[in-house]
Image (cartoon, rainbow, N blue to C red; front, side, top):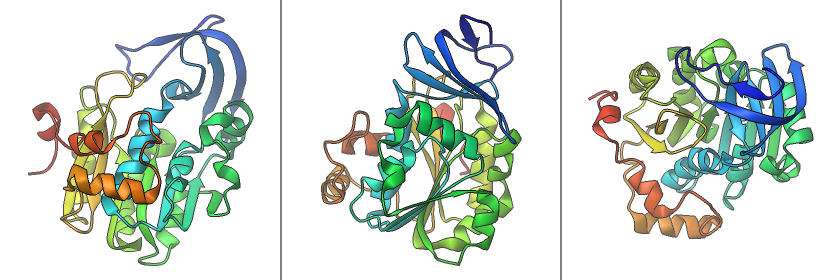
Length: 287
């Protein structure tokens, strides 16, 4: 990073850059390099190992879609496990759902949580203090391996891409354990990258999940700072019927959950439409 611009390093031959108004934090944790800065256009921005993770301006798109879609597709998820998501935004959206009784968040890097609380507190918006929340600084892989069978209704994996600290969250063993600790109608959602640039991420992750889940699909969200077109979110459910709900049913569930009318991107119509994939994405899913 120079004094005026951050050039993202996710792709070697293509990317984006942000004009920096001021740098707020620069930390080398036990796991990764963390930078938070004030941008000219997107508010405060968190960067992990040179890759944009979240901006205050558009975080709502990703957070709403990775949280509301699985919980409303399930319809009665009361015990939710979140892996990663150290900024607190997913935890915040999960706890918007009235029926959620327990939300466990396992983030491997405590520095991400600390810096998000200090410099980007509006993203979690008080979720840290909700009595239903349990925040664990620890290894999500180990937690899933040790968790009791059938102990969660939904698992949301908000990880980095399958490199570095996030790599182990894309393995056969991880998805096998996810299936084991989910209840009979349980489901798991995880970010699968931007398929225009990262096609292998969705393809390989879907094949791995297919070994353990009858329903394997994906849905999309248009997040401006995740350059390259649609971001995909992988979707796998133990009940093959989950993920095919109507707008009317999702609307009713959202009203009951208390999230209808509270969002800036997600709506019941967007929810259902997000599963309608363009062919260049649907071809990456197992037949």
